[in-house]
Length: 161
Image (cartoon, rainbow, N blue to C red):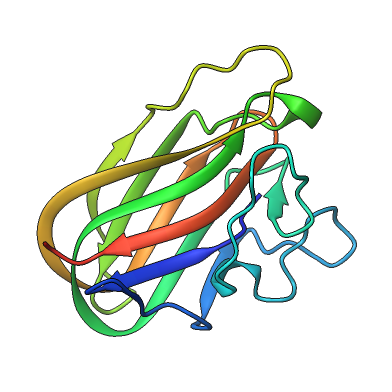
């Protein structure tokens, strides 16, 4: 489930209402399809509050590409993800992050598999992210290796401190 993309510059979300792409593209008939711009609406889903504000994937490993609108200096990217087990929603097995200045040539910047332990059916939420050497990027892509439903709630991209 994908619910939000945020890009911060000096504490300001520069991705608010910007475009992004999903692959595979969910359709309106699927449960939790993102057909209303949920990833840039500025809303975090709290653990256990349901997934109506999320876009979700249960059959394919999603890739989300954020278009920052211009080349920006970035250093950290992370996802706020839902997990714990209720309804088959699990933390992703792995999240890999890539950047590009032109949308054609991509450079991997890192990946993570760190997430809280899942116990039974207790809903949980956490950030999974990567800090990397500062670089210029217009596009940031998150590749998610899912386990059960992938419920990603918020994407944050930060400039160097």
